[in-house]
Length: 488
Image 1 (tube, rainbow, N blue to C red):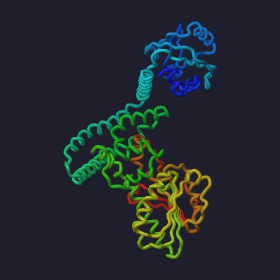
Image 2 (cartoon, rainbow, N blue to C red; image 1 turned 135 degrees about the vertical axis):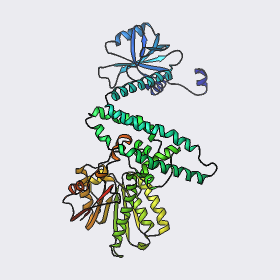
Image 3 (cartoon, rainbow, N blue to C red; image 1 turned 45 degrees about the horizontal axis):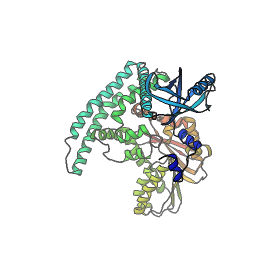
Image 4 (tube, one colour; image 1 turned 60 degrees about the vertical axis):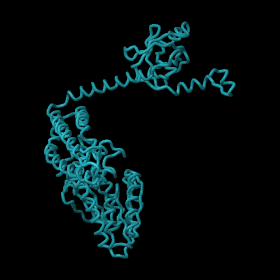
């Protein structure tokens, strides 16, 4: 449709508006990768669109380039990526302006393309290939500097899983057909068997990891992590638990859904191999300890109810509450305490976590009809550490896994805030993974980028020394999770 026809239909196109739309449509190009060659000049391309592009020139070059375009209103140029010719096109001067963030006064010259459109897809293809090659070269240089012993260790782990996977794939071909329950039973049996097998085969090698990393500088450690995950990731991250731990969709490891995966006895994953790996993670000692700590905390809540007169109000708080599994367990068995005036407060900085806990507890409460009050507070943990709690009348405040991420000064400060918020005689309970059972820690750190701070009983007693009137350490049955109990 021509300009006359557009006017007849009531449309008009402003030149300035057209220029703005062209500029808004432009996409940046990696600096000094794409060039326009014209009249003896080779100008770096700054950004591109289908119908226009801009190039950079120095203040010293600008007068000569201006003079060239005055003499050659429309000029032919070659589009190059590095030294690779991509296409020829005709351009004309549109405008110029100083580069906003230029360090040396660079000038941006906007050019209109006069013939067929610029092949942006071709530029982007070369750009993507160039970036990939640079990344691969950097990876190769980094890996080349790693100790041979470390690389052999990772390669052997990878080989173990790479040769195990096709064997499990062949087993999957034998699954029952047309019977969902039998197939589920089949998958569960195989996954449980291989989870135990992998635990026995792989876990003895985990203590070697810290020794292999000892002596590496920060550059080498960076590439050691990258190398290990490049090699092992494809064999681990198909498992839902490992995928979530590494990719951290909520921004952190150990989110409420990961805790749920540890609590649920499910066969999950796209393939039988993925299901075996998932089962391996959730059934190891650390996963079992997380389930145990839910039972432990539910028991502590029950003991508090039993030790309190029926007509006495109770108030409890869970910090970094996650799915609040311990409250779910307690509520499901709360028949002896129905009707008691009790308030449970869940505090978490992840709103989705609180919504999930709210749904789960409400579902159970509809059946139990306990009459307990449940509150959910979306607070940043750093604000709690800085400002403390506004309410000071709690009977018990506990946190299951938060202190696994805290340095000693932050841990002590947070414990002080918790202790300030309980009544005289009230208790705080702080969970922490035990350093004496650190076996799985190096594996989680190296391959899943999941870092915890492990502590011994002596560490806990030292960090919190002098707080409260009484202090002691308890543990779940495996001794993997420790709990320091401090009474005000």
